[in-house]
Length: 134
Length: 293
Image (cartoon, rainbow over all chains, first blue to last red; front, side, top):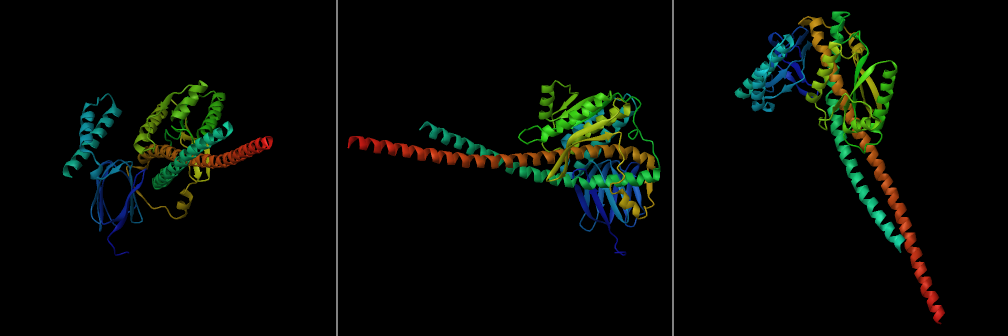
């Protein structure tokens, strides 16, 4: 166990536990940029941003689109709590394109509307990028 | 003669009803299973989130978060009531609405004006019947509540609370304890009540890991607390959904059984009526024959 280079990784959404597997490395979008996790990382609680979650492990790579949430590392276990985790197949390119147009049309009046537009833009852009890459 | 035909007709009608109620019972059972699976699937998220909040608030100390404190203006509050769209589920809606009305009266006495956000057709039509005001009917939800649908409702409420438009938010719903026990309950979502007893104690028995935080704990809590409110509301919806299906299952089982009892009573009556008629006819014939002889 001590020699193994994998750690347990779970992705949990309000509706279900999406993934529970061993991983050798995980890269998730933190609130301030991408963060990579390898095994035996020091305990961490981190806020996630919008972006792609990449998990590399013995049973192949996994990719998810995640929208906010929290990551916790403790005792060589990584738990990702997110309100939305979608695999690439679940993403809808047309919808994302529509959302992008909508987001661009959003009016900015104050700080909150600025962040709302920013988030919507980012959400749509990341989804579109993921769909295109396939 | 007429009596017999009436009995046959009634028995046929009851049989048809029994067929329908039995089918509904089966459907409710299947739906209940699905709903229960969903409810259990949402548990890990809730538990993990509660654990994170526990870990964080220990590090951050006594935090003064807007979602934890009561606003100064306490004259207005809001309440979300979860009822079903369809009937034939026994006392499900009645019980929820009764506890809701009790809560509303209590709020009224305290001089708090409560805006009712009513989920489900049944609750809406009941309040219309009572001539009670509904602030906002919520009718567009699908049969199985999904997080994406509940999230906007929760976000709107959180926003109104932080702006000070409402001093508290309650949810009236049928809490699911077990398959045999559901209770109507009114719980307070905002301001948040700390649930430190839940799972947190067991965790603190061991040493708490020395976490690295990004961003700092206070900022993390800023995001965590609203997320907790959202998931709690979602849980209410899910549990209400499970309870509804149980309610329907039980009601339809009772209806099916009652229909069965009724059929056997009617059959007995029918047989007796038939027997009586035969006896009468025989008597007639014998009487006629005797008169001729």
